[in-house]
Picture 1 (tube, one colour):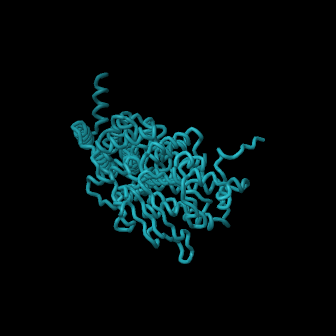
Picture 2 (spheres, rainbow over the protein chains, first blue to last red; picture 1 turned 90 degrees about the vertical axis):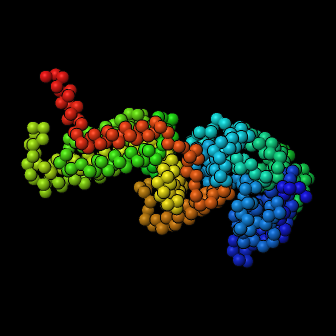
Picture 3 (cartoon, helix red, strand yellow; picture 1 turned 180 degrees about the vertical axis):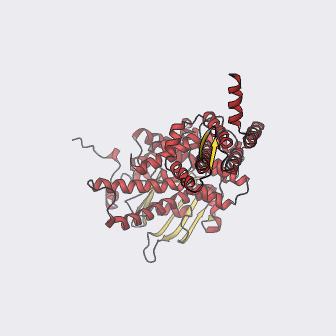
Length: 247
Length: 270
């Protein structure tokens, strides 16, 4: 088994007793996996991602990140290994400038300021936003905020990246840029999204969820081209596979 | 722009001017904080009738505004709510203190002098505080507090309160905008929906604040902020800046500097 991996076994979770959002979820993500997490609204994709970083720990079953169990006592170690990009960039970015926000994590992990600066610069270069270094967050467009959000986790040099709807609210150029960034990241990544075209371009494996369960787990090309399977679970074929209707 | 929109804009604007690449902005936050505290202490220490001595203290805000390239007009606009309140404090002095005095050849009630002195003290201290926050970011200020051993929890509270103000205001803005769009003929919010609106606002703000906090946790936040990052050291020029102002304040406290300068300038023409 490779060093970087996530192992989820028989995980169930609900915010209220008796109302399970996730039901008996099991999967394994290895070092070079790029996993697309797809499913209709409310099937539990975001909840599953939050469990993986320990934002909720009252689940049943077992979640292990690089052999470390996701439990309250182990959270600092786990969170050092995982970068999580929130759906809403406004909630992720809370400092005044891009630099301050990207430097937040390395500073918290106690790196000397020269190392913090090197990491921030590297994260800015990876996301192609060196020109935004000193820009105020509130002055940024939605696309710029999303790229800064990604840079904030890259500065932690995580082994694993989790993203919740990363392409939401991005214009085509920013979306294309995001796809390039995602493809340049070699380690394990799990992306929850409704943007099936993006999943098709960035993920080699797809997990299809419905009603809190994993319906199907396999190669992206097989799952996202199966029209019947997708429609049965509240989805449609990716746009690139549909015949365009021009009015 | 709505009032709330304006308030959000003002907060962002203050952040922006505090981060400018100005000489005064680059001075160590602890030095600026100490100077401000000393300035306020000296200003309030003037005797209530020592209007001429106090007038000399205008030098610091005056020089500060010029050095920091701050617009005095914009600043007065921003302080338009605080300044009248500060000025109001001494408004009854002329009625209680009726001892006649003569100053610069003008006869008046001592109460008028003490009222003007009190107003000047208020305005000077507000301007000095404004100068501090307009040239120092909240992170740097909090860093200065930590250097002064203000408890970590209190400093974190100050920093997060400042950060969360905009979160709350943005939510208020969204809710009131959505309301206004569907109630075009109403001024303000109808009292019948105050309850649900406030409830919604509270829940949304808590939710949003919760996500922000989660985001902090995921990036290694353990209850204490690294307020400035660079852990800037006090430079020799910072010390010179501090000593210079302390000397000026001491001088102003001892001699009515404006009168002395006035006599010197006047003497040239005699």
